[in-house]
Amino acid sequence: MQTCNLYYHSQTTFVVDEITTVIKEAVESTIGNSSYQHSKINQWMSSIVESSLSQLTKLGKPFKYIVTCIILQKNGAGLHSASSCFWDNSTDGSCMVRWENKTIYCIVSVFGLAI
Amino acid sequence: MTPRRYTVTRMKPSCYDNHGKAVNRKRRSAPSVSFMDAGANTYLIRPNYKDKFKAGVAKEHIREILREQLYGVQYNPEEVPTLSRSLADAIKNRLKDVGFDRYKLIVQVVIGEQRGEGVKMAARCFWDADTDSYAQDIFMNDSLFCVAAAFGVYYY
Image (cartoon, rainbow over all chains, first blue to last red; front, top):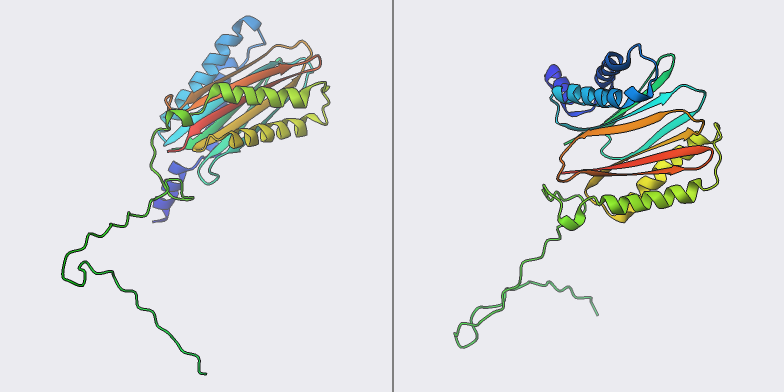
């Protein structure tokens, strides 16, 4: 009975840890060791966002997803990202993943809304 | 004088008059149900055309708020976190007031310093393209740039 409830809970609410792992993998596989190159940004961007979204949909949960990705060149500038959401706290959630290497900052945020 | 108690018995009006003739009585109309009762589930699976998330309208509101609040503001690392949060809340409250009633709203605001660095921001969504939509706007001045994106997702 308990496992049944837990399973139901994880299928209908946003589980942050799972999503974080999926996203980190997607970012690592795309820009793992690269340095910032203006000409490749578009390609990296599409690849990160598409692969994250396809991995998320493969989880098979009844959720709508919004994935945003910011890629920033490291040159000492500051950046802040904030989000405000009007949704159902018990079922919807968001997570932000920050990733960096020597020349690139990458911030991916995922919003999941239960259907 | 002793107080008298009266009991009232409600009687259904008769269908026949005193001479035994059938009387035509106006049927009382059924009480109208308001479809917008608070808390009542209305099972609308598609918004009416006029209730859709209008990207143009949302963009105008976002633009107004960004212009108002960021005009002449310099990038200050201590103030920017609260500024970005307050912008996100202001945009969300404004969009709630505009009246996208059955929409869940997500507003993301990114403020960065202008130092000649390269930045790119992209978003991709897995949703119902008929009902859901987004609006975005960018504000730039000499010391900062700000991107605000608002996503509206229909609640079935």
